Amino acid sequence: MNESSRPTIAVIGGTGALGSGLAGRWARAGHPVVIGSRSPEKAEAAAAEFGGRGASQAEAAAMADVVVLTVPYATHAAVIDEIGAHCAGKTVIDATVPLVPPKVGTVQLPAEGCAAVQAKLGFGEGVTVTSAFHNVSAHKLQGSAPIDCDVLVFGDDKEAREVVIRLVEAAGLRGIHGGPLANSAAAEALTSVLITINRLYKADGAGIRIVGKTADGNPL
Image 1 (tube, helix red, strand yellow):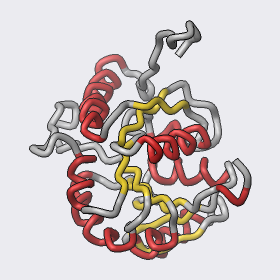
Image 2 (cartoon, helix red, strand yellow):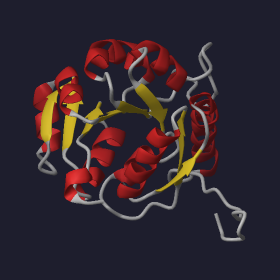
Image 3 (spheres, one colour):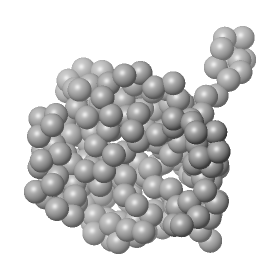
Image 4 (spheres, helix red, strand yellow):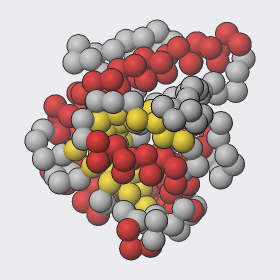
């Protein structure tokens, strides 16, 4: 990917572990990155770690070509309301998982099916919503070390999924097409399963790896 083709990425909620880890990896891969936060001052401090920019959530979304949501489920709807007007014509990558404390190890999907579908309904027409990064441990994204984990990518627009696959690769992971946005329910639910595995087996951030062979016999 040449310099001119690298989209500007806004990471909303980028002061948290997941958001800051992704932002740093994309910045090191040569992408212009803006961190958006309810506190612009905290966003600027976080972005200074990798030479990026910090701004309010709405300002960051307005600056970007691709908007990444890495916010807690409790604030998911409110953030979408805040940035929605600045996401028209753009691709949004929603990493939100509907974890409801205190039982975060129990699957609790919303009536709409998953958080990603809620996001699509919240943004409305004109915003291309995809989802990804549900099953990679946030602390493993810190730094630039390779991560032995696949990332399932969901979206109703195949071209948009391809964009996300390339960004997954830029972050140092392998992206796998997971089908339409509604399928995000599987990865969102799996997060609670992985949390349970981490607790029961004292695992250091369990993830997923897709195995098998393609039609031509090559390893998947």
